[in-house]
Structure formats: C-alpha cells, structure tokens
Amino acid sequence: MTNLFRNTLMVAGAASFMVAAPAAAKIETGSAVPAMTVVDSNGTTHNLSDFAGSTVVLEWTNHDCPYVMKHYNTSYDGGNMQNLQKAAATDGVIWLSVISSAPGKQGYVTGEEANALTAKRDAAPAAVILDPEGVKGKTFSAKTTPHMYIINADRTLVYQGAIDDNPSANPDTIKGAKNYVTAALDAVKAGQNVAIGETTPYGCSVKYGS
Image 1 (tube, rainbow, N blue to C red):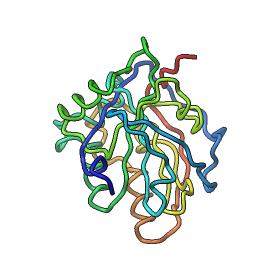
Image 2 (image 1 turned 120 degrees about the vertical axis):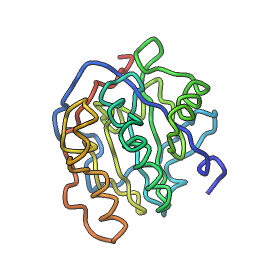
Image 3 (image 1 turned 60 degrees about the horizontal axis):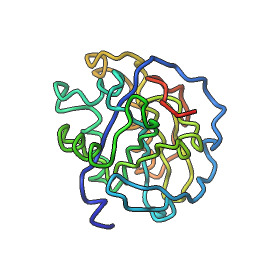
C-alpha cells in the first residue's frame, strides 16, 4: 500500500433531496468492475485495478449536502462516516471518497480544498477522488450524496445503494438505523455473501455538469 493510502483525505456535499430509482445501474451488483483511471486530490493517478486483492468502498460525497453533513456531524460520536472510514482502514479496506460535482456546481472543490475539508473533519478515507467531469460517477450511475458502493477483492461489485435505512438528514436518526455498508463489509470480511446487495440511495442529487 502506497503512502497515499496511509494518509487521511476526504470531502462531502450537495442540496436538493433525492431518492434515486433502484436498479438501472450501468454496473450491476454481482458483476465485475472494469479497470478505470482515477485522480486523487493530490493529483496522483491510480487505477481501480491497483486495488485488486483488497476490498474497496466508493463513497460519493458533497460537503454542502445536508444528508452528507448528517453522517459527518462530529456531535454524533465523532462522526458516523469518519468512524466507518477508520474501522474500514483497520480491516485493510481501501475507502475512496468521490466528488463528482462539476465546476460552478454545489460541492465542487479543488484538490487543496478537498484536503482541507478532510483535515477539518478528521475524516479518514484512503483518498479523495476528484471527478469534476462526472465520468466515474456516470459509469457507476451514482445518483445521490451519499451513494455507496463496495467492491470485493475479486473486483466484483457486491453492494450499491444507501448508507443506511433511514432517509433523513437528522443526525439523531443514525442511532438505531440499519447500516447497509457495515453489514456488507462484515459479510465480505467473513467470506460470506452480502445479504442485501442493492438498496435505493437517498440524499442530494449528484451535481453533474450535464
């Protein structure tokens, strides 16, 4: 693992509430995820194929989105998303936060701004991926922030959808909610099939340029 993926980086945001329609994903749950090039907030280029052999989490994010804010709210035990990221890193999971907001759209940030947000919130993704043209977001059919994807060590997409089962922007609803990401990661770690492989994501619409 490179030094980049030992570092903590991150960002989030968006606005109008949206419950995305299920299915219609260009990459279906249970299918192989193609190799694709990504660029992080430090300008370093990587390929998803580099992470073969490791579980990868993709978290679509927009720091101005109230539904993202819900999960980064540090008043809730230091932040739900931060805790998930740190627990995943402990298990060797590569957590990539992806920003697909286009320039001029809500949630757009430069690499420097992304890194500053990561530090400010004590977030802990392996890297923040910048996708201002929306290419990666559209490849995965990412519709909301947050929108979560889990890829296993064989590069198979085993989960996509909501972070949990409570589509509210209120941080108080985190407690007691069923966390789909945690459940899926636990199953992958145990070598078991993911019981719920796809759910309807909730949050703000991804702010694509077109």
